[in-house]
Length: 556
Image: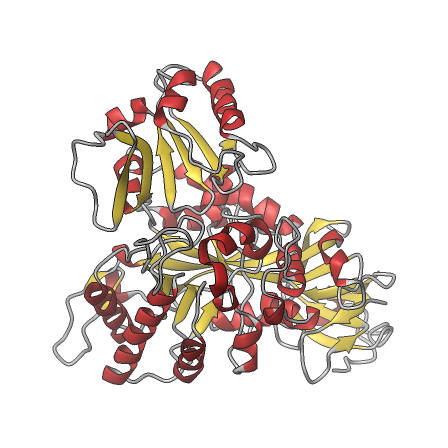
């Protein structure tokens, strides 16, 4: 677009801003590169060559050759949970490398925590601890006998509690929730490990959190996201998942927005547990929604409802995902569903019929196939154009199911960052079935739209790290993961921008640098498409713009 050659002081363009002398990667196939972007209020109104908008009367910033890309969009993250984790005991593999070190970290926190106050640790990975096992309640008791302790596994599919926490949760006395397991140790008593839905036993004591805490968590996460170039994120399960229950989480996002703490755009996936039948006229389809019939699409450019989130199974590194074949070295263990398949299919059908986009967590190949069965049946019973139902993670996918995903118009949402951070553990769990694991190239080759996402706080969520892993396909031990599934830098960038926007029905508003779209932009210190792919992770976010305003970095 070419803007007017001049403007008077009262012209709208006098309020505008020109980003000039830039290396603009537009992610627009019709004009992939540009040198200048003209912005008016929160929208892009011009994209052209360097100097093209010099005479329009708008303020101008000379970017001196810096690279501008569309703002990154994380299609699957847990933003509020990540914000909470910033204040919990850090147990990530980069911080603690053994059960002994983990226990010592909990002991250090216990020494300065009043008796009876909960201690929460986050991010441990038994696959990366020296002992290759979970800690036990007895080990935690030794350093924290008087404080209840809960340790969050990096996958989110396990937690470990000590005896004080078990006593409060009455573990061993109460019925275990369906889709969960209370692990029994060698002494015949609970070891402290709670799998999947069994986490509810302990987590219900910690949730719901105060509204003020939720707002603080959202604000803290926003600040980190902006520093990483993220301008949009899709919150994968407001209302509670895997034992957490936050009935006012949507209100917390609204409050954070009013208070200026929510600084990026958020699409919220409502937990299916929050949906229920709504009274309706006999002429209407049966609603399965939030109160007043709210479903996918309600909201504005800053905060809106996307899909409803359903859990089908567990995790690969935890070996609880529903698989067709047993996990490597564990005869008889092929994981499990978190609910009977008939109930899973019923939920998909009810949500689809009520107008929801459905996003189902499915990691094992048996779970992926079952979810596709449910989607196929729902579409057959109630045809709907462009439903864009999603499979979150889509971790193990047989070739025949890749074809079904394409035929049904389903959007798979895999996480590239898993390759580096938990890839070694996944490969140990699946052995020779690695070619089916976390596909990307296979999806693109079938014409399937690929989003970019992290599942943060499961792993580090910086999009540049995710792009690096989608391209390089190396695990944390530098072993090859799935080289045949590698994609190009341009494809990975598109995934984290336009692909993620498409996954949320937002491709007409964001995801590329085009006239009429939101002015959500990220400025990088280098052109990631023109460097050694091994160096992508070293790229720096210089500035981040949301809605025409620089909210982070050099130009803020």
